[in-house]
Amino acid sequence: MFLPATRDSIARAAVRLRQGGVVAFPTETVYGLGALAFDARAVARIFEIKGRPSFDPLIVHVADRSMLQEVVAAVPPAGETLMERFWPGPLTLILAKRPAVPGLVTAGLSTVAVRMSDHPVARALLEAVGSPLAAPSANPFGRLSPTRAEHVARMLGDRVDLILDGGATMHGIESTIVALEPRPVLLRPGAIPVEQIEASIGPLERATRGSAVRAPGQLAQHYAPATPLRLIDPRLVPDSERRRAGVVTLRDAYDGYSASRILSRRGDLREAAADLFEVLHALDALGLERIDAAPVGESGLGLAIMDRLRRAASR
Image 1 (cartoon, rainbow, N blue to C red):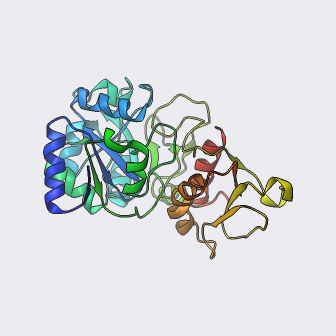
Image 2 (tube, one colour):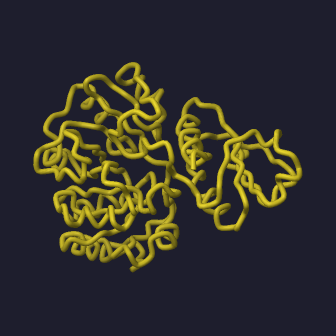
């Protein structure tokens, strides 16, 4: 069921969640697929709907500090600093979990990924439910993340009990994920540039590709369109290889491609990140043989953009 996000539809979604249902809803990053975090059977439906492997943990969304205490056993000083600076917002922290959090949510780990959304619909839904929600992105596992309700409907259809339509998401790219103990580590670059986090708590280590999965979005293959994507400088692509392909670039245009999408004519990385999945969804719908993606510089949000493109190209 596809409904505009209103007070009545949010109340209806809350009732469905309390009954063990699964609901798609907007956040400021991408659309999430939510179920009550403490209801293991409902959480199992998320894995079933997405085709998600059980070794990949979920993010738990909370409305406030009181709800956080239901999920998390302790918050280290660096975590308090980051919460004060970036919550509510697109930052996910890896913290020690309480025993009540089902092992399915955390992939059997002793930690839980948790964040506090800044989206009014997500916050209203959490307040109406009155309980934390486990909510990964509302897409088939490994595929493009949804930034509009229409993307959710197209990819998941009636497998979802209810889809709340809150329009296009603001950031268009997933949250930044940071683990804090035994030392601060960047597990996934995202909507908050790592430079801002390091300005708050000092240098972060970088998780290496192939390291043990501690949070969502760490697998080598992820965020991929159905159309094969390669990461390449379009200037190196011969004209004969462009005719049945699409291209996505930060700001430059290239002739000869069947379809071309520019993320930001101003070269604005925030605008580019917000449009990345939207552009890839559009190219993926054209029946092309291939999508060529031009690299961007890996500073600020460019790090998160390149992370998504590399994982999409790994397919």
